[in-house]
Amino acid sequence: MRNVRFIGLDVHAETIAVAAAEPAGEVRSLGVIPNRIESIRTLVKKLGPVQQLRVCYEAGPTGYVVYWQLTALGVKCEVVAPTLVPVKAGDRVKTDRRDALKLARSYRAGDLTPVWVPDAAHEALRDLVRAREAAKKDQLRARHRLGKFLLRQGRRPPTAMKAWTQAHLAWVNTVHFDHAAHEATLLDYLHEVDHVAARIARLESAIEVAVQTAPARMRAVIDALQALRGIASVTAVTIAVAVGELSRFARPRQLMGYSGAVASEDSSGQRTRRGGSTKAGNAHLRRVIVEAAWAYRYRPAIGPALRKRQATLSAEVKGIAWKAPPRLHGRYRALTARGKCKQPVVTAVGRELLGFIWAIGVHVESHTTHEHPIAA
Image (cartoon, rainbow, N blue to C red):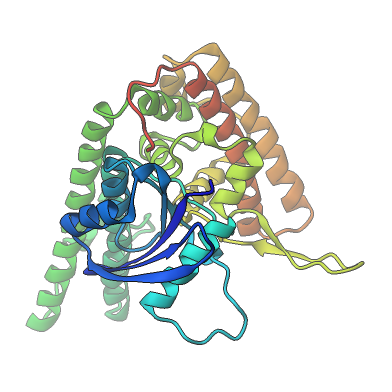
């Protein structure tokens, strides 16, 4: 490691600020280059033998393109967590040059925390899943706009019915107004609700197709996770693309921490104080886990849909999955009996559900051939 040069990059859409921590101890700025593959290739040639280079940059809106370009050139590169980069108290000057110098210096000192980086195929599936999540949020907004509009006009269903079912939508289509402006507003809101529903259907079909071409290892994990109650196809895919290989976590508690569903703590001396979940983790994973955890409010049972999902799975996977409902339902009942609010209780159940997800994922990954790498 005596001749290794540690390179810090402050990456932006159009430019990259470069700094180097030299083997002799000097940390210096190397200027700014355009964020183009030709400029990166030229920079690597000037920096010296690729075997002696260690490059890092912060995760951000530019994604992992620079990482893939550098690794393709044979350079060891790591993407680091920006929230875990050390910051000096009282430092109020921030520039691209200073950020690159700080990264190079901290990288050499071993003070940076690298994040897991997916390969291009995995990232493509992740983007597709997140597009569906965005569409679901748009659907919620569109439904709220239509519902609140009808409420403001005093229009309610003649009989009690669940909102946004086929019966409810059929009733909405029978609503008419005397004023043309109201009629135009209703038609626009209805069109948006229908448009978003069609958009979600298209994206879910695209996800099903994309999963069929995913690596065998990932497909096996997605199928196995559906043995758990509350986790169907889309949820399983979301977990797989959010986490990557579950076996990269040595213990289930590490996966729980990655989700941000663990309790925060502020303790000092003899005082111990724990608060709500930290939420300092993968928000996509945390959201689907909490949604799945609501299924464990009910007594343990295997319905037709769950039995169908488990039909082709191994006895080992089903054995792990069958342990989850009694334990998690018992956990839910015990916490609610103590007077806890439902939302924190379900979050706690979701945190324990991650332990079963980890156990299934590790088992499946250890028994499935690695067709081609999921992660770089």
